[in-house]
Amino acid sequence: MKIVLLGAPGAGKGTQAKKLIEKYGMPQISTGDLLRAAVSAGTSLGKEAKSYMDKGELVPDSVVLGMVGERLKQDDCKKGYILDGFPRNTAQAEALDKMLASLDMSLSGALSVDVPFEDLMKRLTGRRTCKSCGQMYNIYFGPPKKEGACDKCSGDLFQRDDDKEATIKKRLEVYTAQTEPLIGYYKNKGILKSVSGTGSIDEIFNKVCETLGLQ
Ligand code: AMP
Image (cartoon, rainbow, N blue to C red; front, side, top):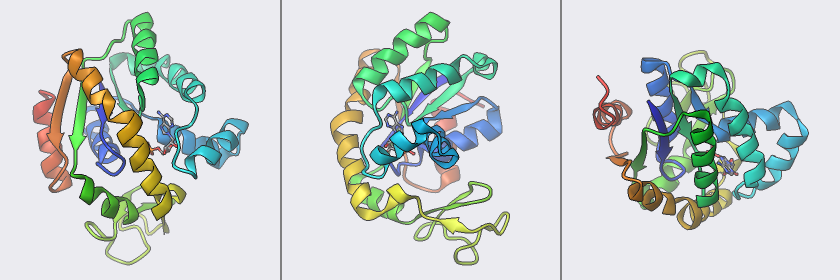
């Protein structure tokens, strides 16, 4: 399976990607995760990226394309991959098509996870992540048993800098202007599928698997 996951920030792409990996074992390539790792490591790329991320803007295409290109060349991607949060605009989608064609790894599908716009704000402002194991919670929809602590490993929960309200507003604007048009891009190619991203995580996951034709 070689797929792109599309959807607004807060639609639950990352959560579904993680469940697909757990069950089917293909690597998830999340440009957001790769960029956050570069920020934590304090690399020059990370420092450059952070200034855009904190404002809710897209990091320049050249930075992201270089990162994805390197990752796709690694052996584990040969059996398939899930691209999560990439591409984010038409230029990235076109560059991705070229890159994948040259590696003989073209996409088998694009899956859009659709969530009503009104729900996204609460999902994003309520999101908390475990510092130790990366497990995600939502204080409104799926809170941890003990406030501020991870159910799995008791690690501290934190709110991403770019999940603060002003940044979220900007991220949603950027999504509508730059990323949403990719739904049409993949529809024109005849590889677009969509699922509703409303309901429990497991319900959505069942729909995702069914839509992708997985057992
Ligand atoms: P995400 O975790 O996918 O929501 O990404 C968090 C932030 O990282 C975004 O708001 C952007 O600033 C940056 N980012 C992630 N993926 C990309 C991408 N494909 N192109 C440009 N910027 C990105």
